[in-house]
Length: 346
Ligand SMILES: [Fe+2]
Ligand SMILES: [Fe+2]
Image (cartoon, rainbow, N blue to C red; front, side, top):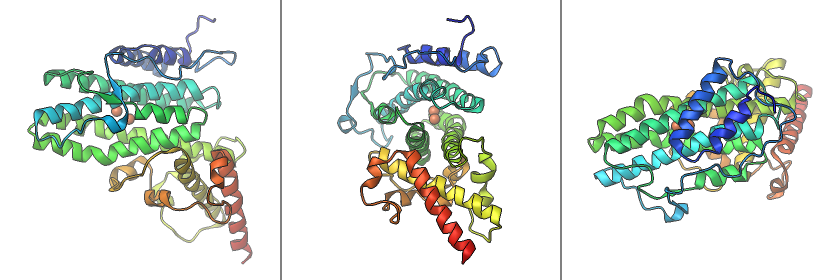
């Protein structure tokens, strides 16, 4: 092994460490080394380092099936607020692992550009800080991480998407992160109404705005993968094509704009199809439209649409279950190209 540390090695050190406080500390240090250029190589081409299916975890935190989790309550009692805070602490501990796992599992495999690593290093740094702040707050209130049972749902999704970066981004870094944005305002109100202004402020001023940027990273890199597929692995200017608000509203298109609009539709349809295939459970409204928009989900992403049938002209009712997201992107691109051609001719 070379003396030069890679980001992959740093990520694996976090994943193979059980104590989440240690995970956060190691992750913060690794993030600083990457951002300051002390780690300059994301991975070595001949690396064959094993990525753990499940990161190391503390055995003192009792994991139960989601259906067996006790109700958190609505924050009217201290016990309820502690249960809510414990649930948030647990989610942040998994979020640390998810950020390093996407770097370790997919960075080299998908030949991702340097910005991909930097974006998820920053997400990992945030999640580590969130864990430390919320775990400290839990202790200030007389409890600790492990005092309540926790569920493993986030890592179940990680295992289901462990072979497909598009699916991982759509489910973990778009759906779950956006779900967090949907429920956080209510959670903040519950702490505030229960008299816990400190926790409410922490969630409102630190956690909430940073979670929006995490969701934005999911949207950005899901879009990138679709664009790269469409463009035949050429680098694409994703932000100008798909993430600009001016691209959300329907309008008269020039030929170039029509092509870009078609690409955006491909991304959105591929996203819907990927979520249908990999996400277990309903996408529950009400959605936090403002926060989702800030993260890059414009109105065209229409979350309610995810529950609608697949594109009828290309997919039978269950044929999509046999296609990978990349094949779906191809099929949707082909369909949109045909539609665009018809428009040009007609
Ligand atoms: Fe977080
Ligand atoms: Fe997050």
